[in-house]
Image (cartoon, rainbow, N blue to C red; front, side, top):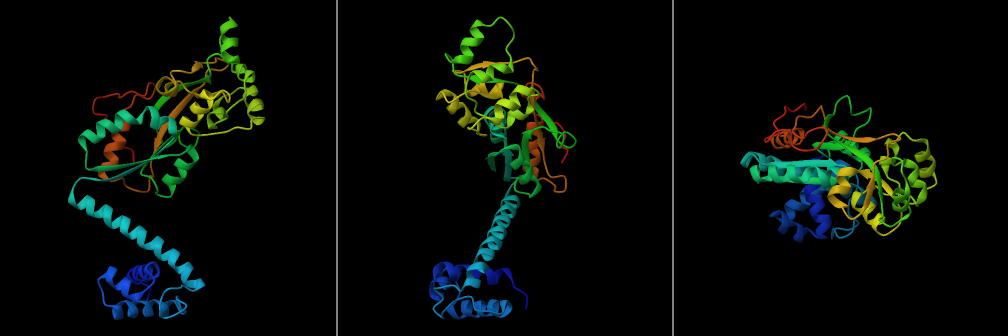
Length: 308
C-alpha cells in the first residue's frame, strides 16, 4: 500500500493535538478510525512514529516525517483553495515578486485600477531583490516578476519602465555644498564626499570610481524605504532612480551625474513553462500598458498582448 495524502493529514493532526481523541474530534472521525490510519502509515514507513501509544511524543523519524506531512498538506490545501476560488468566480490569487522601487512608484496606480475592476482577486506583492525575483519565478513561487533588467532578462522579459539613476543625499551635507559651489555638471565623484550606503544599483554605473568606493563601504541595503531612511538619518549617500526620490524622498537632495548618465530599466518576467491564470494575465496586461520610458500607462486599459 502506498502512502496517501489522507494518512499524512491524519498523522499531522494527531501529532499537533497530542492525542487520538482530540485529533478524532478535529477530523470528525472515530478514534479507532484515526488509529487505523496511523497504523497504515507506520506499516508503509516500516517504523514507529510515536514513542508511546498515547501519541503525545514523536520518535525522531516521526519528527522528520511530520515536517514532510506539513509541507505536503499545506501545498494541497493551498491548491484546493485556489481551485475553489477559480471555480466560484473569475477571482483567484496573483502573486507578484518585485524590486522595492517598482512597488513604491509603478505598481500603486496599476493596483488601484486593477482592484476597481477585479475586487474578487487577491493580490500578494512580495518586496525582494532582482535575484530573488528570478528564483521565485523559476520555482513557481510567483506568477509575475518585476526586476532590474540585465542580459538574462532582456531576451525574454517585457520592458515596462526606464528611469535615470542619480545620487541621493542629505541637504546641507558635503555633497550639497560641493554641488552649490560647482560650475560643471554633476559627477559620480561626488560620492567620495560622504559615506556610502551601497545597494545593487551601484553595479549598473559604468564608472571606475564607483566600484572602488563601493568596495570600501561597510553599510549595504536593498530595500528602498530603508535606503531613504538611512540617508535622512545622515548615514551617507546612495544611488536610486529619480522616480523613487520624486515619490518618496522629496525632502532629500538628488542629482543626475553625466559621467556617464545611467538608466535603470525595469522588465517584467514570468515562467514560460507555466500558463498564467486569467487573473494573472489581466494584471500582466495592465502592467504591460506602462510606457517603457516614463512608467506611466501607455493606454487607458493597458491591453498589450501577454507573452506568457
